[in-house]
Length: 115
Length: 116
Image (cartoon, rainbow over all chains, first blue to last red; front, top):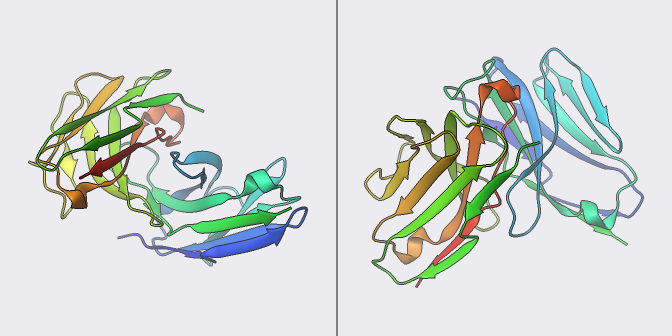
């Protein structure tokens, strides 16, 4: 089955700096890669996703890059703010849809943005 | 995005009792419902997948008689933890899914279960 590795497990940055979280996946059939932000005591919130036919996607301060050949994808947060502090999860899924294909999650990265 | 609600948001119960958790998708019809469990400082673990009107499919190691899932409608699914024990204490999160949502998967706010 699919295996997703996520690094680093913790990341501490100064406000205004950039943060990068990296994930690798094992199943070359995976074609959907979402990123979730989870604040303490809350459910995961989808913040950005990318599909295998795209190499990069950007939404304001957040960007995701995908390298299909190397089977890795990364989350980039620029101009970090204290409210970006949370646990971030990457995930991978194959298939064009349907419940037969399940999300496989990384183990998460605790991001702390220091004021 | 999608609007998903869970009730209750937290519950404390005595060992041996049963607890029911409700999950509602408020702005779309979910043909599929995923139920996850999350222990402190860990990732999400898929417990089971259910399709509306069908029996749930459980992941390996998850007891189907202990975690009863009902997905009777496209907007409501319930997870019942039967005869709860302290080791069942966890954060339970539902994730309604609809193919028409472009493969995006959204999550509920979670239910914190504490079994004494």
